[in-house]
Image (tube, rainbow, N blue to C red; front, side, top):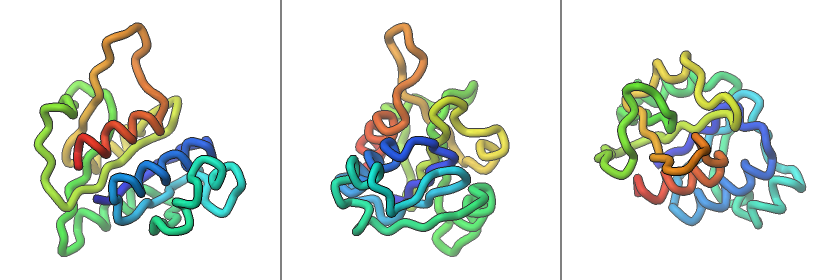
Length: 147
């Protein structure tokens, strides 16, 4: 499983996602757009070293990366974590591998441009008053459920 972070702003969220990605066995993390990259003390503080051994790569344009992943021999399925009209509940979704999970900005989520490249979209059902979770928490739930 591959993880793609699109314009995640917070270094602490990025560090937390690295740590969770290691726990789940993510093979690589792509950091795209404005997503901060290691080395940085705030990433290291929450990653607890995971940023030094989970493979990662920076890509300026996430859409180009997604196109590349789709067109590789591996034919990676692109799954966006976003609440849309056609999103499926992640707890009933049947993943097909290889898979790239795409997560977005803490405030705006995934852009319509990025969603166009997603083969499927999944959401985490919300039962309280808030409509979303922190991006690192949502990513953790999604990674473990997909695994």
